[in-house]
Image 1 (cartoon, rainbow, N blue to C red):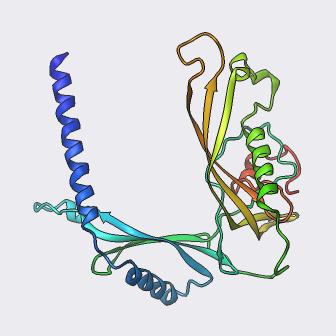
Image 2: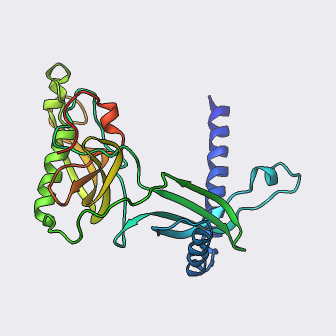
Length: 272
């Protein structure tokens, strides 16, 4: 009824006010990001973390720590800096696929999936340069360099491979699950970003090893249109999945999220 509506309106107004005040605080954050990046590099050296590079360094708004929020005195959000670092190879950072959709009946034949994620971490500094948060995972060690400069797939070739993979990824792999609705839906993917990165792939017969290879990374936004004549959504395009596609720039094979081989065990040979 009406009382609920007015309570909800008051809650939304309060939330909007909070968001606006945070936006203002964020805009006032004049922290020296270059100095913070230098501070991060110094911290990593001090900890003996080598072979990584900073990939993100941006302004942040820090909420109170748990012990601060339990005090009587209110603690306002503080300006700070958020930093991410990741393993690099030849000066190029390593990344992994972060979004996609699969089912356990899909074959991984002619695809890669590393057993582990690239080394990565994050640091949060407050305005005084104090470390407010630090995380670091998947530390790795280089055991061998197999090849230096190599010829890589052109953008045009990689784009076609990515389109093929998006088709595979969004087509039902088993006939039992294929519905009439699927047949009446048209999907379109817009590439929002395309770049060359390094990515981990699995090494056949070596469960603990990974190999870093150059990869084309495509970040895409999907749109779906229902083509059936019935229903109010007929012919209307709406947002669909956001998907990332990684294509091995040496041989054109898709590189899936790390750990996919274990999830899809027995569905095909790993690696291309």
